[in-house]
Image (cartoon, rainbow, N blue to C red; front, side, top):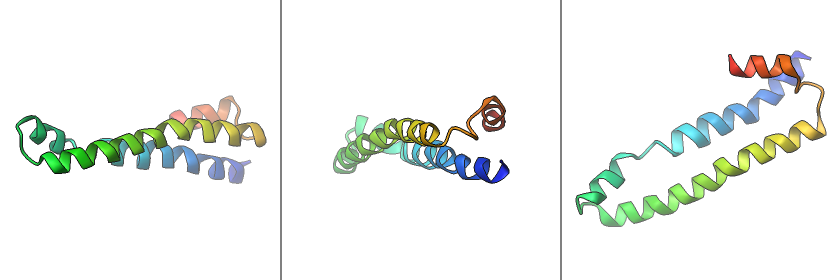
Length: 85
């Protein structure tokens, strides 16, 4: 069971940390500077990157749900509590 939990935690950690935190909040200064008419080209590129990363964040729960449906064993109440911790 522990091996199943370890494998099941990986996509959740990836979705939360990599997609959710690192990409979505990684460049907050650029839009701020764009509001002051500075780095307008970089801000436009950032908007494209943010749009792409937002699609990844929306895709992650769907992918995790598909994994849970195919392999329901580790996805119980105890696993939910482990993820919350």
